[in-house]
Image 1 (cartoon, rainbow over the protein chains, first blue to last red):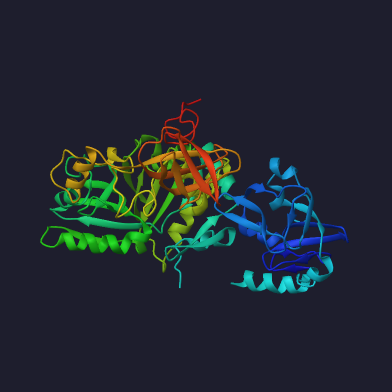
Image 2: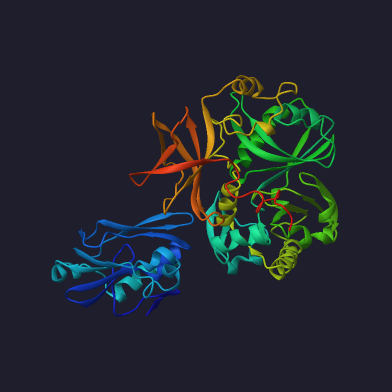
Length: 137
Length: 369
């Protein structure tokens, strides 16, 4: 679905802070930032990713995105262990702008409390409402 | 309610806009990086009509500006575009501005948007009893900037190639009075084009000029550019922004801008402080280049081996040098260089002279191919 001009894929879950989570299996979740977030940041030049093997707590700052004019934190949508990070972003940070839900993914986690935490994530429809409100201003 | 410039409708649908000092202004068109590179490699066109424009006229105009500004107005020849400062008694900068000298009795001043009211009050206070009048013409004129190595070809129909750097020419644009200075805020060769008689009620002449120059700009491989690129380009060039590198509490001497301060001329406001500082001052402005993915941002603390040395006044990612760069106001010596604290981590920074880019490859002094 779309909200304003922004893509909001229906197979993902979202956070209020504009991260997305793709639940591939109960042991693997891919995380990135949304089309809206990428457009707000504009011209991403560096992505600082977490260490593979590290553990993260839901809602904590685990990565950051540098654009020409600003820096933003990326929050962990779910607690868990980092399985992999998207090393290609080191050479091609523009993928975050070009393909936020595809080649611009950030990291993969093995969730430690998927069932209890995923309920706190936003559905595509709920996230679309949020983006529509923000884009309206 | 934010205002827009007279010609906003000519491009408003093609840009991402932002609020700046009470105006809705373009932040970028295609993208900040693309626009920076367009200016460095070909030409970029900016609407800078938010900048304040003030006509100063009268028999006492030169004397008035001699007292008000750090430059020698009466000693300058007509046709000069003089960059300088208007300072308070402590030597701090009320505003930086360009004074275009038409004659000893007529100047056009271009001042910062955010300081315009303060400037007018300050100047008004010092104009009492002087043979001088001031008219704010910001809302009845527009100002465009065409910046980059191809700007001179782009504006040749207005006689661009015969205008020397920091000089200007006047001409008629249709039935409007216009002027064009070889000045700018990017470090590149370029021009600023002022057209009178363009109001919100009657903006057509300004909009058609924007569209026409933009067509030529795009044909030359350039693009329209917004405030994001403008700020990034001026940082790359090491140029100050009021409220960051200079301000009422930071003097031009501290900011390394003594070349725009004429200490030999008769007393101007702030001269005593500048003379004292010329003999030695604690704070100075330095350029810092970071490595890796570290980007300094305004307000970051700067450390030397002796502890906290100062702070970042402006920082950005530089599309031209592809590093994080910043200007910092620091005190004391730093034998082993500086570190910038970015999000809790101290990052090593190299000191560099301005501009940040290689001046043989980019900027108005570049070696011609």
